[in-house]
Every structure is written in structure tokens, then in C-alpha cells.
Image (cartoon, rainbow, N blue to C red; front, side, top):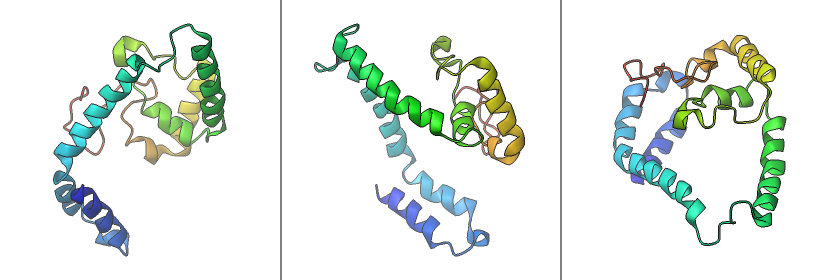
Length: 154
């Protein structure tokens, strides 16, 4: 995507923050908005359809259990080793607990008191960061700070 290359070129060419122009950046982003949106929408459908792939493990099979155990070992450790006041809260502040009728409300499997502590300590340690999040500490969608006229449900 040529627009994406222009996006990167613009950002790396800035020698100081005072040179940044939000208007310029938005103009550049508009040049690849439609293909990027189409790509992201297709990517979600593609990932969702992987469950129907002929080589996908059969639900309940030993292969599925082994795959899930390996995934949990690798990805679970990554989540546990992430920063408790930066990386993990970033993930949680952008995780909509109501998505798909709340099917993923308790994911990742973190005990509720720990989840509460992580979100509430992070709010005080890095308060300026979380204003850009898509969800609040209850993991409910909120209007976007940088796009205040956005609807809650995008």
C-alpha cells in the first residue's frame, strides 16, 4: 500500500514533535483507509474460518488438547510476564467484555480481584495513557478520546 509507506515516511521524517501535523497525518491515512478497512474486516473473517480448515484439530480430540496446552503454555506465560501496570492493562482496557454477548467476559482467566487491581492501579500509575483506550475499567466500550463524536458501538 503506497499510502502506508507515505504514513511511515512522514512519521520518521519528523525531527521534533512540534513538526507533527495531525491534519497532514489524517490526509495521509485517508489515502489508505478503505483498503486497510477492507483488509481488517477480511482478516477477522479469515481467522474465524480457520476453525473450518480441513487440518484443524477435531473438537475434543487429543490433538486439540495438545495444541491448546501448548498455546496456553506459550501465550499464558507471555501474558503473565507482561507488565502489570502497562502491557496487561493496555490489553484489558481495550478488551470489550460485552463483545459476542459477553462470551469472552472472563478471558483471559485472571482472578477477578487481580484483574481489578491491575486495572485500578494502572489508572493511577499512568492516567494519561488510558484516556486513549476503547474501554473503561469495567471493560465496557466508551467513546474514543481522539474521536469524541464516535458512537459507543463502532
